[in-house]
Amino acid sequence: MSISYREGRAIGFSIFVFAFLVGCFVAYMALKKNSDNLKILISVEKVKLDQWYDLSKIINESKDSINNYSFGRIEVISPALLLINNAFDQIDVIREVTTEEEEKSTLKEIEYGLKVLRQAAIGYQHEIKLGHQDGSSGKELERILIRQANNISQLCWAAVEYINNKIEAKNKEIIRGTTITKYLLITSMFFGII
Image (cartoon, rainbow, N blue to C red; front, side):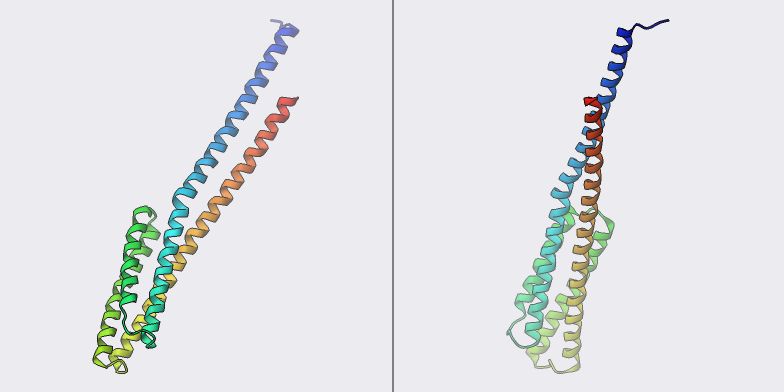
């Protein structure tokens, strides 16, 4: 069976158009995937990072209030207790958007630490009201307060760093996918020109 020049040219052109359309479709799908990843990154991960950052700020403010109270700069520990309660509320907000087990376990650790911190703050305030802040129980409660506040603060900042690193890794993945898609589109355009 022989093929005329005209039929061969039509078949070759059809194959070329088909390959070009397949390349364009693959490039479109890759761009769509990158776009979806970017939407997820912006809508979920960035919001979660901001919430963890807010929790870290609340805990650092409560830590400062506790230090101010223990040094006698403020008369009451109520601001620290209020900030601790705000931290519990922020944990509930973060828990709603958290899906990873590592983040959930960190939240549980922070929540437990906040409970200990709140109890120690109330006990320390009671010791000071009784005039026993220089006694062994007052000093021990002060050490517990400072240690717990530091531990919780470190946990929060570690979570912020973890989520930030996760966002950075996703950004690199998106950039890599976009670069591959760019080269695929350039190749498709090159074959389209030829």
